[in-house]
Image (cartoon, rainbow, N blue to C red; front, side):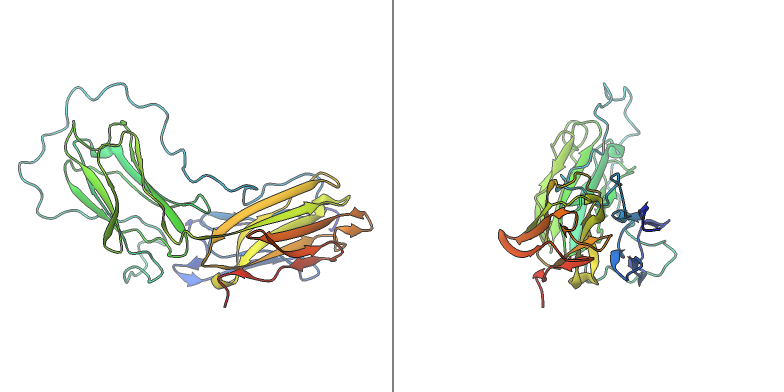
Amino acid sequence: DDEKCFVFIIYDKYGDGICCGYGDGSFSVEIADGQVVYQGSEFEESALSPSFGRCTTPLPMPFPSTRPTYLPSYHSSQSPTSKPTKNPSATPSERPTNQPTRSVLTSGPTSNPTSGQPNTCISLELNIKTDEFPEETTWEINDVFTDAIVARGGNYTEQMTNYNEEPCVDKNSCYVLVMYDSFNDGICCEWGEGYFSLRIDDKIVHEDAEFGSESLSNTFGSCEEVCFELKFIMDDWPTDISWNVTDSNNENEVVASGGGYTEKRGEYSENKCFPSTGCYAVNIADSYSDGLCCGYGEGYFSLAVGGTEILVGSDFGASASSRTFGNCP
């Protein structure tokens, strides 16, 4: 029914999408004229398409209209008012001879066979020596571009013990490590001489011990950016318009999308940045296939990459696509 408004949601009950740890799955959503309105593969628990059809009210968008900040609100704002009056059991007189190893599960069930980290992972090692309150220590690795938590750890139980973590994070994005202490006193020095260090390619890039509630590393990975600005002047049917960005270096995965515009003849501006390792194209769609001009107003759009305008359109029918930009073959 082309007089109604729709949104498509796909779920993965294990939270690892349909690519790429256990197969190269993907999905796409096409409407009656064969136009692809949404596609993807790596999406964790769920993926939400932009609205399509004839929409009169905005529907939720899978990506924010402005670039997100990357630090999550992971811990409560208040800590316990005092340390326990009685310390946990005494620290062993000798360090354990076999250091325990904990790995963060980043994909697929444990029943699947493993053969080490894939070669798309950053060579990363996180070493943590706990203090006398190991349960207070947790950590996260966040994707700077998407604000997604790509790895996390905690639930440590052994006092004054070394834990080595080697989570797999993809080479083709930019990350930051955040180390937390729930009691806001770090892991050194009143309650034991703990510390942590982060190694990338066998080189220490961040280490800390006395840090209060959290310690933030510098960014690491592929942190060079390619940025664009997409501007719209809408016609009388702004709800018809949606857009997405695909990465042809990653099986045309949709890496950003937008829509749900409501203001007739209104002005909108979208600004996005992505890792420079991708090869991107911006795709504009009109669900009513009449573009932004000229039957119901004189609208248009423009796309600039790195400050240089590469595409302008108005009377484009059902869709328009830019030339690729970024790291393209």
